[in-house]
Length: 303
Image (cartoon, rainbow, N blue to C red):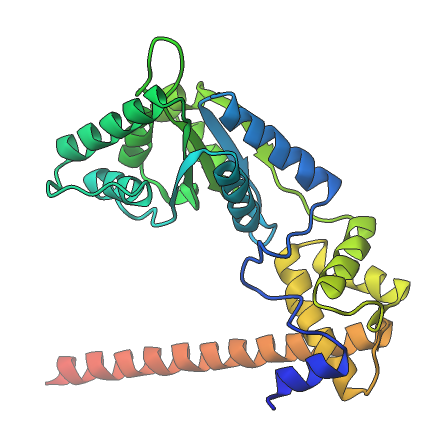
């Protein structure tokens, strides 16, 4: 039995409740997140066109967008999810088409656009709605934003054929404010932002995730621990999950199922120690590379 299996068994858990990867299956729905998702889903269903969801790193944007994707599919909306935002022009358009299930022998821009337009018109005739979700949209270049604007122009006299949700970090908003993108920015109907968990939401989140993994009260979170976790993480989902994963391991090492302030402090010191080691290693490698480069330059110069 590996170490993770041992400490999960010790705590009465069937799986790790705090993974770093997005966990849509065990999705925590706070009141704030529920309201955000409801508004965006409503925007898609009522064919509002452009929508934007932004948030700092670690605040659950990707998980929320996957949850929205699942809800839309359940409601019969045809969806395309794009997360390779380094693609441009025909490549980006082909990615959108592929996730709609569209394939063509032609790889040119005109052929890909015709394929998408025909698909959207056919779905519209069938009474269906379509949506494109673009993750990490802050990485799109100006040409790609213009392509997305062109796609949004595919419409009938009565309604838009495709709804578009941009998901990205706050710099996405700064990009959309650029003069070159003012036409696109003017079309954004819904703009939402993810926020950190407050202390009360954090407590609910911890209990929800533990119970989803089978705790049923066996693993206890003290209020002092919740305060400490919130102080360290500032309510950031990714930081919470990283710290809580280490807290579970620390509780196992201390032969307890109670996570209190001392367990959190021990887990945090452990995490910070790892970061310190990685930083020192990174500096050592950088220094070694710099010295090697100097040696090479010197050898070339003197030779």
